[in-house]
Length: 180
Ligand SMILES: Cc1cc2nc3c(=O)[nH]c(=O)nc-3n(C[C@H](O)[C@H](O)[C@H](O)COP(=O)(O)O)c2cc1C
Figure (tube, rainbow, N blue to C red):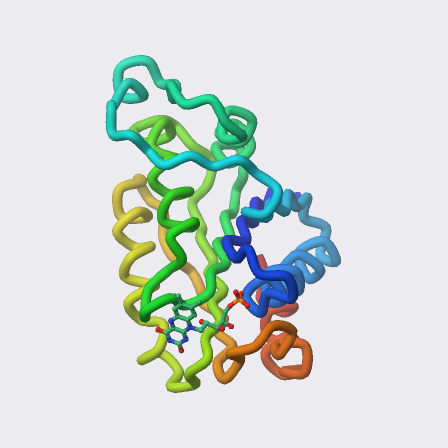
């Protein structure tokens, strides 16, 4: 049984990227994985202040929801990051989340596989989300043996809840989850 940690970084109600993340969750649970689903809406997440105390002590000096999240992330086999495409990149919240995972940098973490889910108004395939993948690979490349395995993308969804009618892509997200 794999442990899967999903972070959904859109604050929008009816989030399209979250719709993909929830399908991934459904598929992963169906195939017996233990899934932790975390929405940015439900946490208090401060910006990294760059003090690097975590490099010395292993802990973050900031007092917010992250203190309860480090262990969960570190002990997961698989990480899933979901983000709306903002200016062809990731959401600021996902970037902040990745920055705040710095206490795990250089530690022995369990996760090796990362999956991504993006949504955007435009529908030009990889052209629309390739910079977002690059942004996240900047993070994965800094963790030994960690790689981005697969990305699921729903385009043409500018308004909330529009992903709900994209059955083919939702099925793809479900299958991705099932095969984790
Ligand atoms: C600040 C901002 C920037 C955006 N930039 C892009 C963009 O560069 N390309 C694009 O296709 N859509 C862009 N969009 C549209 C969103 O990607 C789209 O509405 C997406 O479905 C939002 O995902 P969510 O529902 O999960 O929040 C942008 C939206 C916002 C609010």
